[in-house]
Figure 1: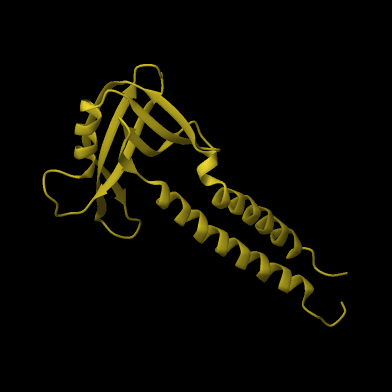
Figure 2 (figure 1 turned 90 degrees about the horizontal axis):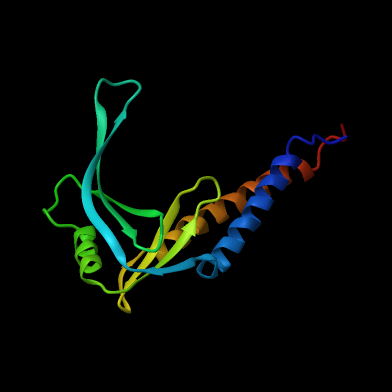
Length: 167
């Protein structure tokens, strides 16, 4: 009897790759649109310290965080953008924040996370004008994961179906 240890991960990675393929092909249709009027918004700089295990130094990452809330929605939304070590005082999210504050009507394209209650903002339309667009970024990650999971699935199936010595 052949070793089933390679067949089970092969099927798991194949099912995961099918899930990712559906996400890639229908990602735009899976986004939910929410309309509303801005209640409040602000841009803040957050510092995240990541300790290293073997060194006494820690990595420090700075993120610009745009937080906002719509009047008709109890959910608050956040958009993160990593800041480089050297940057000017204004960043992309400052411009988005200014456009949010001057808008009369907002339209958001959102996607809810499967594992948590987090909601990711993919696009913001302000009075018919796109002021923030992150729809391409979402597809790129899924595309890479899809090819990695297909390659893993082929690897596990090759191990299982490889002609052996008959044991």
